[in-house]
Image (cartoon, rainbow, N blue to C red; front, side):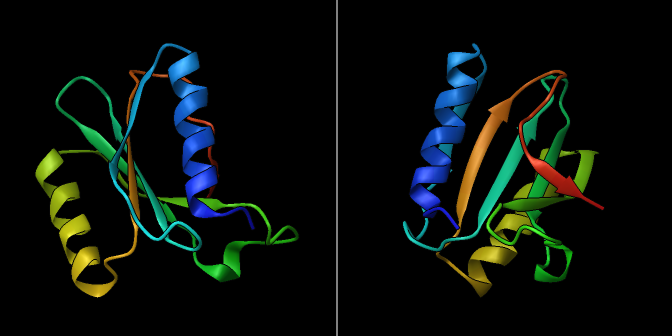
Length: 110
């Protein structure tokens, strides 16, 4: 699996090159930090994509796979979830993306 810092840098750059606002909101462990993607829908709602459980990696465990944890909810709900994650594991990353619609560029499983 790619280093977390390299994956985040590529994700941010790709979205910024497409004209989307994408920033690193929280830096984690550069080698193996979990990555969360916070998607601001620009209408007062946000979604949160979290690392998928290892059991859902399927045939290619080398890819980063995500799971939609919160869909179009209020920002405080997502913030509270990330605060709980920080209590458990402070070495995670948060990437914040502003996008009304379109492909966010993540491999998402149910």
